[in-house]
Length: 139
Image (cartoon, rainbow, N blue to C red):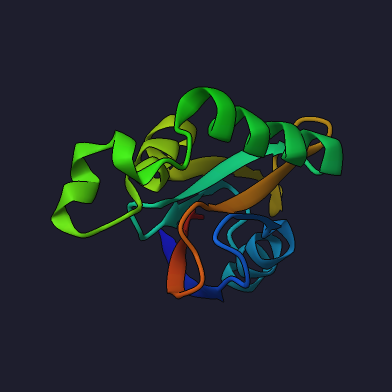
């Protein structure tokens, strides 16, 4: 079995951002020369996410509004975690909701996606250095 590991590093300009990382994942799959297998893409931080969805700016706005309005409003006084001196409890809850990793099948050397699917990094507590692991496994 072949294996390839690569790390993507981020230092976002805003506290919350959604970044399309599909092209980077594709490059790593191609470099691995895996024809049949899987690629794991995982945020290596507890206040970030990796997810698969559509690359459409209106949807990104909807996701951010949903997280802020329904899931975990950015209200530091609301959360016990923030009593430790942190202010990012909402980011932890957002990561739990969206998830921190995805596994995408590789068929004939390509990501085996449905229509419109792309891989995204969701930063919920940014403006500092963070990373994502891309792990390609297969034959």
